[in-house]
Image 1 (cartoon, rainbow, N blue to C red):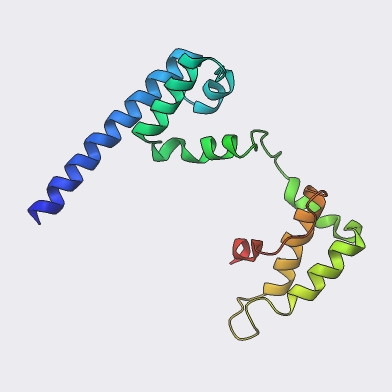
Image 2 (image 1 turned 135 degrees about the vertical axis):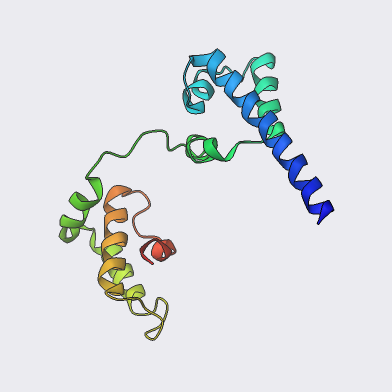
Amino acid sequence: MAEYARVRTINEEQSAVSIQAWADYIGTATGGVDPVPALALADIDTVDDFRQIQLLFTVGLPMKYRSSVYRYCAGHVQSIEAGLYPRLVKQQETVPEEALIQIQKDLGRTFGQSQRPHNFEARLKAVLCAYALYDPLVGYCQGPCIVII
């Protein structure tokens, strides 16, 4: 038990250092509380900015910043407008035929019949069709069924 308490204390101290380092960087760069604008303003072509950002990631990315930073690093900095999903669901009939054929094929074979939650197939189809409309370059892709569970 003493070892667990010691490790927990070390983790808490490291977390505090990490949070303070990120807060200092964000405040200096933008005066705000969100790391994404600070990262967006950084000129990583300069050695100083690159090293500073590298150091920040080395000390650790605090949990409270992870979602926004991961989205930024993955290229998803634009925010999704409110009400977009319901509008896309209403447009299911406009899903390209090629994507719809693939979606229909996978509806019946996802999770098997006995393990499905209530209204599974309709909800899965709505998610898959909405995504096919949202990102037409990708269209249909396997895997997002976990979203509806």
